Image 1: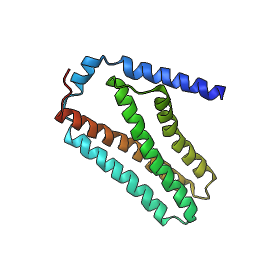
Image 2: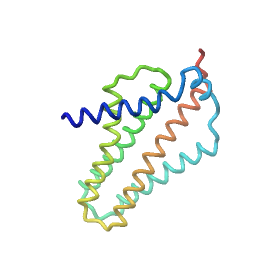
Image 3: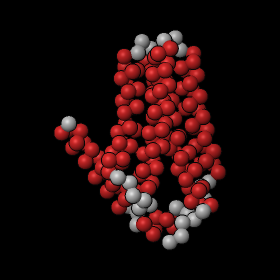
Length: 165
């Protein structure tokens, strides 16, 4: 418990210092009030579709038990939700929207847990190494892409409805 507590405080202090101290609130709101390019929006959606479709087709075509397929599907859904929640918490802190330390820590923990669960599941799975790598990379691509899609969605919202200072 002490080790987890120390890790939490280290990660919280580290990322808070990196993320929050790089921006002053007034400068940040002005810098973020620019339109996201259509190319980046499109690339984000293509990456998300590629990761999700690849992962789901891989599950569909695999010879795993239904319970194993359910495990990997649940990890994917949990991971997607967790990283969106983390992205929102980080962005809220940047914009000086109150986010409790407990929620911020849980968001980090919930974002790292699916990655660890996938690693443990793939380590113990009776799959070819190439299949294990396929699942790992399509999973990580999906996590990255959903963060980019969430960022784009929020940037478009801020661009359409600027925050008055």
